[in-house]
Image 1 (cartoon, rainbow, N blue to C red):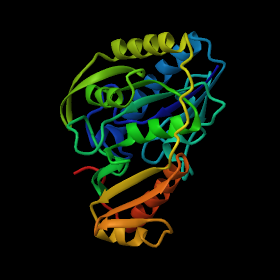
Image 2 (image 1 turned 60 degrees about the vertical axis):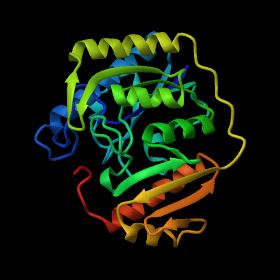
Image 3 (image 1 turned 90 degrees about the vertical axis):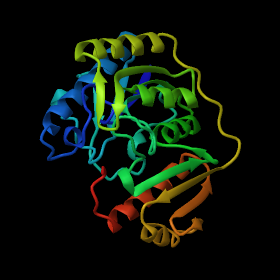
Image 4 (image 1 turned 120 degrees about the vertical axis):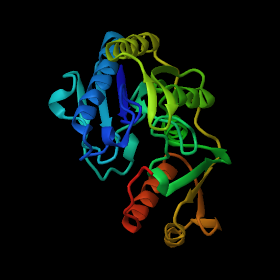
Length: 276
């Protein structure tokens, strides 16, 4: 059984603030170790279920958060950027299931460190007219590749958002949002035991591969900056609905890859901190 893990950071056990998840933050070094422990709990669960090949993709920010020496020896690590598929780099139809570890709720939700991909640079996103963030877009892209999402860990808001997309995904709440930068924390050992047990149980019967999407999807993004939207109109196939909102149509996962290009363009035009 081949398992893929996409590891974000905002939804990791114990982390609640930008200083916990941004390089240079006063608690970032501790945060990256906490991230490794949650990932390792998922790896242990996958191994217990019979996984023989496990790939971990560091999917947060600079994508250099996980220290290779801190990772469980059963897993291989994809680290650094740029990556053509970003948070889903390395995911392919050969994988039997995907796990999303440390994920968070979308922009506008009152979850811990909630945002959609680029902090306040992206005000909102829609996939086929439905509000979407990292959870929904990653799930839809994995489905288009033919890989089921088996489990997700994060705060209770992230878990609820995942359930809105797919009730078959096992979720593990490692903290309970009080506000965007505060949470009621689950004890660390308890949270990691819960992750390990939930993953092992879910993978004991490998999830069924999802059916391929029959029609192209439309991705719409509303940016904080009209300059970003204006520049993106230079990309063939990108249209606007107003001065700050652009959209494009195409099949996933290609549309996900195109969105990665949009983010690189936006990053070149803006230099603001991701949380405010």
